[in-house]
Amino acid sequence: MTTQLRPAGSDTLTAADYREIFEELRAARTLRALVEAAGAAEGRIAYWSRYGRNPDAAPDLEGRNELRRLVGLPELDPPAGAVVGAAADPAAAVWQVGDGLADRVILVAEPGPVTICVNGAAPQVTTGDRHPVYTDVHGPRRTKHRKAYLTVRLPAEWRSELESRGLTVRQIVAAALEIAP
Image (cartoon, rainbow, N blue to C red; front, side, top):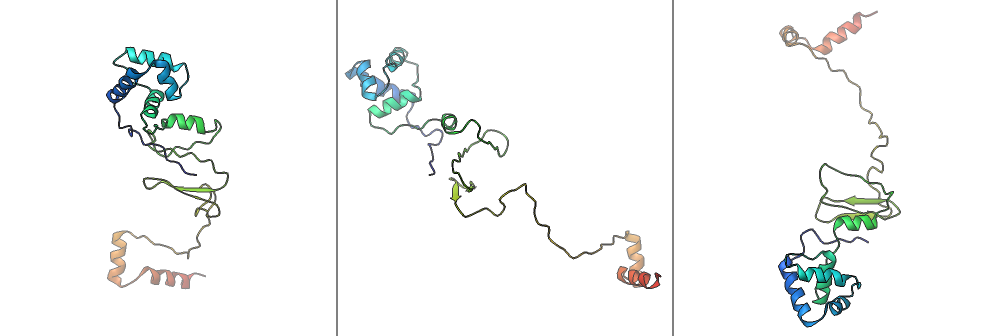
C-alpha cells in the first residue's frame, strides 16, 4: 500500500478563517457542546476557552481538524515528523541522500525486496520478484576482460624524428624483438 500525505502548505484556510468558523459555531452552542460535536476529548474545553479569550491565537492542528470536522471539511493530515515518529520502528535503518533538509520521506514496511524510484512527483514502488540490476551496491562486481595492449607515449621531438625517418613504434618494437636473444 502506498499512501501520499498532504503536501506542506496544503491548508487553504487561514488563521482568520478558522477564527470565523469558531465564532460562528460558538455563537450557537456552549464550549462543552462544541467539543462534544467535534468528537474531541473533554479536556479540549479548556483549550477552546483559552482560544476564545485570545483573539490573536491560531488553532493547533488538532483544533483545526476539530473545526474542519464541524463544518464538513476534510481533516488535515499530520505533519511529516509526527507520521515518521508514529510509523517508524525506533531501531529502523535510516539513509539520507544528499545534504540539507529532506523534501521527501519514504517509509518502507514491506518484508521483502522493494525497488523505489523517486525521479518524479510520486515514488514508483515495485515489490516481489522484480529485482534491481544491482541488489547490493557495495558488493563485488564482475570485471570485464579486455584485450591487453600497450600504449607508448613519446615526447614530441621523438615522434617528429620517427616521422621524418618514416618509422613507426610498431616497426621499432618488431626490430628489437628480432634482435633479442
